[in-house]
Length: 178
View 1: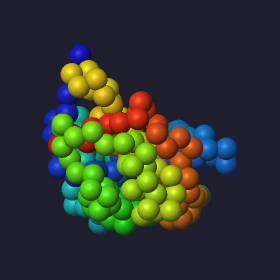
View 2 (view 1 turned 90 degrees about the vertical axis):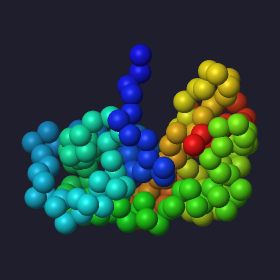
View 3 (view 1 turned 60 degrees about the vertical axis):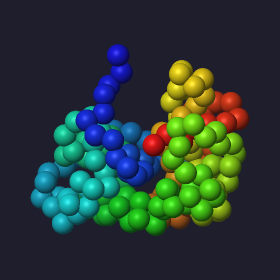
View 4 (view 1 turned 120 degrees about the vertical axis):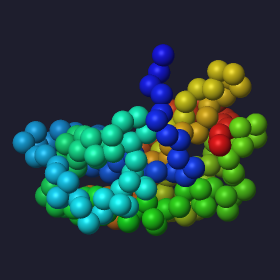
């Protein structure tokens, strides 16, 4: 059986800010000695609880894991606090539910949407290709939208095209469940 969510947010939340190498390859675990403490993020902790929750465990453990796995690869660009502030800023600048709603794409477990329309809606906002993540809904025999990745240049602020816009969304249509 898969992992069960402890909560289900009613909005898109942050999964992470993941640096990539020049070839687009994900950089991970760049400094095993760098750890995160509550003091490092105390000024943004309330925002993190709201916008970067763990769906399956303890929030701080999730943030600490994301810092260790991905944040340490951006230490030359950002302090620990700046890493989390940048992710929060990017999230605020990209209200994905609003972006999709403007394209008449709204949560509905029965309505089918063209995958390309979802990509186009995000592209309209960022002028760059996103990366969609879906799970397979066996009951409806269709991809279900789960996550939308937005890719950035090394500065963590300038958009860039993600390498695989359709990501794990297979076929031509998907559902956007509530």
